[in-house]
Length: 393
Image 1 (cartoon, rainbow, N blue to C red):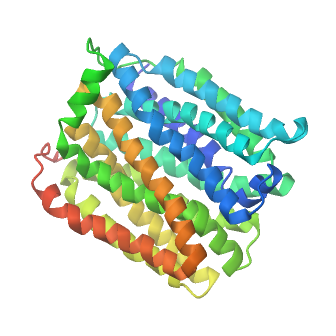
Image 2: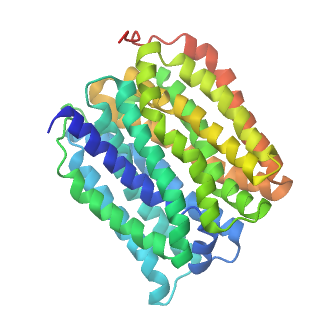
């Protein structure tokens, strides 16, 4: 398989995993109600949080294991099979007589623990390719953006059919990912060291904290929009689940379309401008969404969030490849996804709590200000990094 085909295939796997995940977001309150939750906000918050807690706990395990054995594709397939089984079981529980919501959350943790393997390792396999880390992460970014852009509106439409339909569709997608992963050429560098030595080699590289910090805050806002943004659009503007999915797509569509060209741009001009300037602008436009007085203006602000997010996302992920040695990329990318998952979790819990206590406007203000703060605090460290020289092509 040629490098271009491999990049395309891996991007397709990333797309499918994110597409399946985001299918659940537009009507998350309806889903948790069907699964037995008592309250829409708290039930949705803990259902989303359970998955991302598992992402945090298990991303490093998958990454270190793939570095230790020098193989990634079989582990992607295994993670996808586990994720498919988790989604399928969630969809079947109401028909089997139901279960306590605590048991539902436990199953959600198991599903998340498997799914993160497929997601994180497919991104790592993209880093294993030649051709420029910005380009490779641009491919990952366009897959992430496309998956979320299409998953949100389609998920909203599937919810119109029934609250469990998106979960069933997610199970089918993960099963397809398991098959596709086994057809991709594995280019992971060989390693003869154990998991402990691999983990230690990454912790000895403090420079990785920079992309990890930006990964944290970027996913923080993603988690914020998944819960608070969804409920805000539905309550403030009285939107249906289908319309809410379309509103989310206003962010995800430009976020997907511009990832690849902006990732390639970061190979040419360097990572600093896209990451730092992008983060500052991102924080400001997130605040703008919460201040928009009408659904139309909120939609315009969501488009701006998508464009700016596309500028910084691939450059941030490419930093991981710039700073990590080739035979440690699995655990390095896992670390990035751990910080990102913690950020997503914080966005759900923190955003949900602030919105519940102080209202939606305050929650949007906190989310945007946090992005600005991380950009300003990290800038001096960023400027001292020794990064590969930009290419002139």
